[in-house]
Structures are given as C-alpha cells and as structure tokens.
Length: 422
Image (cartoon, rainbow, N blue to C red; front, side):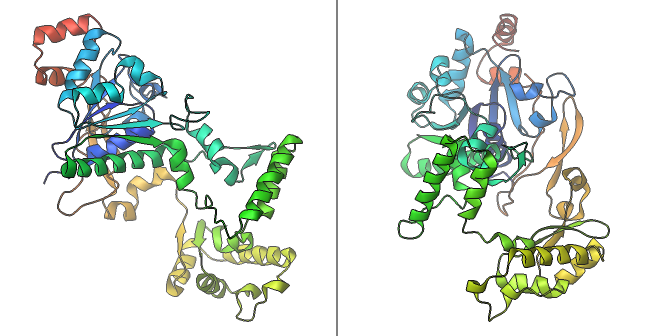
C-alpha cells in the first residue's frame, strides 16, 4: 500500500541535521524527496567518512531520498532547480538567513514560479530580533534556550552541552515534518501554498515545561530570580552560583528525585520513574524503606531534613545492590512501579522489544551494503510508512532526475563536463 504522502514531491536544500531529518520523516511517509547538494556533497557526508562522501550520520538522516548535486551559482544549475520547483509540492531549506535570496531560492522567488508551493524555512533563531542574522547550531541553541543550564552538568565551573543527541535539531526535524503535513492538508482545503517558519530556538523553548509564566502565580518570584541572576552575572560570579540560585528558587521538589533516577543493581543498572506520590509509595514499599513524606499525616511545615533524605537515598542505593536487575524488574512489575534496564544504543538493533515492534529496518546502500537502522517514527494502518531505500550516494539520481525534466543524455553529459552537476 502507498504511504500517506504518496505522489507528493519535495525539494530539499538542506544540510546537517534538523532539516534533513524532517525530510527523511516525510520520505518515510511516501513523499518523493529530491535533495539538492553542492557538488562536493553536503557537509554531513564528510563528517567521519567511512567511504568517500559517505558517513554514518549522513546515512542516518537521508534515507529514502534522491541526490542531485547542483551548482546553484551557475545559471544552468539554478535553471534546473527552478524547473524542479515548477511542479513541486514543497521545499525544505535550512541556511543562514541571507543565503536563500542570494542563491535565488528564497520564498518570494520560488512562490512566483509555483504559487501553490509550501516553503519550509528553518533558521536558528527566526528572522527577526538581534540574533536573526546569525547562523546557529544545536550547542548554541542549547545555551541560549536554557537547555544547557537546566542539565546541571558542570566541568571546571563551565556548563556542558547535552551530548547524547542534538536535541534542538532532532525535535525541530519533527516540527518541520509536522508543519509541512499540516500545510499540505490546508492546501487541499484552500488551494493555497504558504511559507512555514521553523526555528531551533522556538522548538527548544516548547519542549521545556519550565518555560511557563503565570501572571498571578509565582511571577514575582520569577522576576526576583531574573534580577538576582543578572546581578550575579554583573559581579562575575561563577556558573555554580547561578545554578545554586536557580535551584533555590525552583518549585520542583528535588528530594523526590530518588524515585526518578537510575540505580546500580548487583549485575546491571536500572531506572525507576515515579512522578506521583502513589507510585513513590509503591516504590518505597517494594524496596523496603519508609519515607515520612509519603505518609497521610505528613506535615510539609515540618519537612524532613536534607540529612535524613540523603540517608534514605543511600539506603535505597544499598538495597538495590542486593538483587539483580531482573529480580528488581520482577518485583517492580508485580506492584506497578515503572522501571527498565539501562541500555546502550549499540545493543538495540538486536533488542527483542525493538524488533517485536518493527522499530528496526534493513536497507541496502549502493556503496555501503546492508544497513540496519531505526525505522519510521510512527505506523499507520491504512497508509503504512516504509523505509523505501537507503540514503543516496552523491549524484546517484542525477541522470534519472534530469531525464525526467526533459534533458537529453548529451545535454546531461555537457552539464556534468561544465561542473553544473555530477
């Protein structure tokens, strides 16, 4: 069965993570994605290459696409791009704010060629404001959005980035796919194309539950904290002082994190996650400890001292060490405590839970051979998503795309010899 976006044609002018990931999600839905790249290939192809022009990070972000290298600064290269736009449904672009217009692929130019075009423009900060002109990458967004400060990871007094994944980039990729899908639906109703603006900064703010201000509840405390942090910065105070001040003013009860964390067992590491008092009580009973904060007659005005909470935490650590991970999972399962083992990503291509739910797919890459990778993010019963092909080799589809546009084989050979394409 065809995917939900079967018949949709999308042109990508993308690189690195966020926009390529958004395009891949749409490719999984059945859209035809033509990725226009520089003749040297987009930069992510060159990041830790294991074959010439091929890297694992590029392969992981560009499944299901066709590659067309073009020199857009060459008149004939831009002409090819504009021909593709004439019957395209959507464009995805991520670049410095000044780049699209200089290349002739900005919204105003392309929407004149195709008024029904949906144009998704991803920038770091948005086009307005004091940072609108700047390029930006995931680390900068982590720093400016509060993500980095919230992670509480400090080395030599300096806050460190969230390194497990490019969180701003990947979540923005989901926003790109979501926005284009919605715009396609709106066009079915109105017949009109439109421009979509996505930004790494807006996505990063949205995924932080703490980015909420209620005028009549806590705003004065927030304003006081902002004023204090500003004064500390002016005084040149170290980051730890800023972090300590923020934690003092935090409404989150950090003491309860002993029920939302990881523990070493006798043979493995286990995570437990209890975000309600009823679940915390179940966890405490299952482990065999008493937490006075969980009793019905607990008086918050007579809160347990930090020393007592620390002692409780140490007791739990010691008790968890007395049994295996499997034994604790069985205990927690029996009483309804959310828990699971800690795993590394390299272990998961063979994980029974992942395999049972078809979360891993196998594709054949033209140069690299057989590849196992994470499959489509969602499944749909009537219009199933499908990992149709691996990422393209650079220029793998040049002839096919140009022949479909009406170029002759001789003309394609001439364009290649003139370094318009590969």
